[in-house]
Image (tube, rainbow, N blue to C red; front, side, top):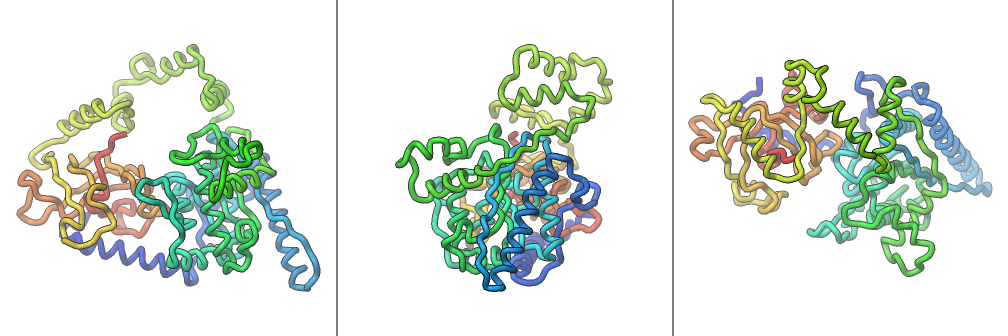
Length: 455
């Protein structure tokens, strides 16, 4: 089923070939790609609710205005177009991702081109959820080793950006709250140089007619940077920001000139009004003791007698356990490992090696970025940590997977300290090139690209 005879090098070559093919396809004609719902259907304008339709109407009217302006310029007549700089706010579950996916679908079908709209987000998980790329990858933003200092765009990156943004009509950036000033400023600066061949570098975002920031400011702030809330001081502190930081603050302000909000919660049913109220309070940190007690009593498996023993076992098996520190995590993982350990499925501590150590060659992973050891067995939960290998394939930081097979060379064993040829994982969100056609979410991964889950 999982082709255990396949050599690890074959798997690496397979992945590299697909990555190179993706790079090549970015400069050649590709099949039109539109996001799909979980049931396989397209996102349609008719499916939008009233608050989503109002926002979509504003965007499409601006698009029509821009197209009319292009006709005027072709006729050598004088015309003036003000590009759309917009912020869309909304709490979790109000339909922000649906709005983004619908807009992407409409624009790509309208222009019959994938490259007319670009979607980005600050993290790999957020980017995957909206079918986009991370801000770093989308806008060729490089950082120093401390993850705080940004570096200029290389010539190679600039060439790729010139191709990527040659036809850009819309740029959508999700999870606005996590976007920092320097990150947004760097994105704008790089797009200025590359959008539409770099012929409008003096214009905001290189003349791209539509730029929209989407998010909820009550969610996480940027980890290393000043964010949207810090911009409140921009007007009163003339010397508060400078350089790329000031450019980012300016972009937050420009996009704040038009703010529209998605207010209706769409994930909860009409009969869940009480739950909606609790979510609204939690969003703005207004949970009182009574509400907290109510949540504990209703969600506790011990106190809620409505669950049968079989249901409790099923919930336990499918749950992700979260701890405030590492000690309970280690204890829990060892407990679960002891339950599955057997003669046919031994548990062993594997001392890891980077590809550089193993082959005496070069590797994109630094020697200190791989874990010292990993405790793995079939059925264990693993995650990608600290890397966004290919977010649009689901290979992003934090992506969870189940180990379904650990393949060793003939005659080798983990009990002897041998490393496996490769580990086969089942990543439910994986949507990249298929390795096993009968199991499209199953993928072959080098051991050093995963680490034991420590959530």
